[in-house]
Length: 404
Image (cartoon, rainbow, N blue to C red; front, side, top):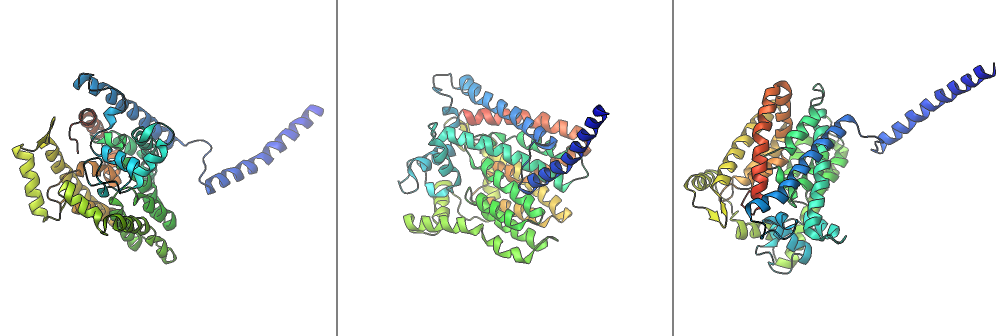
């Protein structure tokens, strides 16, 4: 009888524990806490880790193979390429110390370089700090891309990790690891868009505001968020004031540049001075790009830029296909996002850096994941083409070639 009595006590204790566990789970969900990552997160982080290892191996091996080792004194030099010089200069000197990187620094938004400065205070320096930032940000962005894909297509099981894998394996995926703005921007933009799709407008506005500190693409994201709000069945008119929040960091940066450079539009003027991004009619811009992609007379140091201009034309074609798909699905907010990005690039003297901007188009990577889910052979074909291209792109970047 005594033994049976103990069994009864144990059963009652277990039954009392179940509501307590349920309550803890509910509290954890309320505060966004997960005691153990779900399968989507674990698989996504697994692909993130594998892809990061591959890129870091290339960062060590490519300079040794192609720069004869003597030009490669330390591991961080491979990461100090192109725009990284400008971010490093801002992190070290700010915006009011001339042009220590040889380019007008007002062309770059402050989110990444100032975060590089903060992380660099640990003693690792701004460049290594930028690598760490992109490392963490790409993981966060990958997880939220997976969640966004699963939210948009709940009927397709395991779609989220597929979308993340396709994104990590993108031909220009090296820019998700380098101290560039893409990974950090996506780490804010992807959860922001997921919140918008869920009708959580205040949360969405906060994330879009953070994204707006990182790069000018935040302006296009603000526009897309407004379109999404107006066309969403989950819009809440009491949340309208929140939609103005993302404009604050943009206007603040403009006011700061006005104070030190005397112009509210110093950012655009810097772009025109350093990168020939003056307004150009789209057909003229396209003509300039086609000329640069065919005649091969644009070269700098060890780089022949012809192949990159060809890649820009491919990126433009892909972007237009994505835009048509979004319009067909009546995904107006996402269509506004892709369309405004394309419009910005095709109204410069020529089209360039659009290849990197494709990393910001979550509809592209989710759409490719849907295709790979429905036609597995397409997914295998994508990886067969994308992974070698990603290796070539990364090797080119780490050896100082122009890669967009």
